[in-house]
Length: 271
Image (cartoon, rainbow, N blue to C red; front, side, top):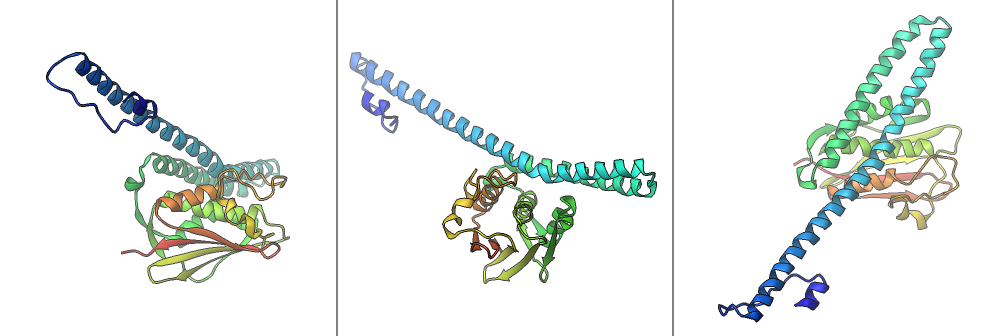
């Protein structure tokens, strides 16, 4: 019994009798010790899990807030220039954009917080229009000023967590823009329909990814080019994969060096 306890095996208990002798006392004591240690190990495991979630939440939040914060910083600079140049007609426009961006950022923070606190079985699921999600991400992060983003056809409405889908689209689009190596970054979003699910594809005209890195890029903190001038920390795609994994969905990349990349993800059809 002592050997089992030392090996963290708490599955068995020693038999006891009604004699209340020394052997029974030792057996009862070992059984109580085994039960208490088992409880402590379970609680420690839960604590470790909570710490991992908190760490992931911190990285995810910091990563996803960078784009809207950069947009706010840019708008403040434009506002400052307009005031100095007495172009007061532009001031109102920039103030409205600042107000809209901060409200969306506030919603983003709350959404990420809700998502991080929820268990996989209790995540809020709602019908969302992917066209609206993409539009909001592009406007909030001001991506249209950095890339030519086209949506081929009309994207479907799906049942998913809205904050999770915002994170997915934000990371895929911002990655395409961030790693673009052409004078004009081009991004195309399209959908392929299958029997039971949709395949959403985000393609770019960037530098491409070598086949040996196709799986690695979805690992936390993995970057394809460690000396890249971009501020990539290998968090975005790992976050995307984690969200999709929690919904039993998939993501993969189709790419070759010098030929751009296409990131594809599955979303189940509404039932």
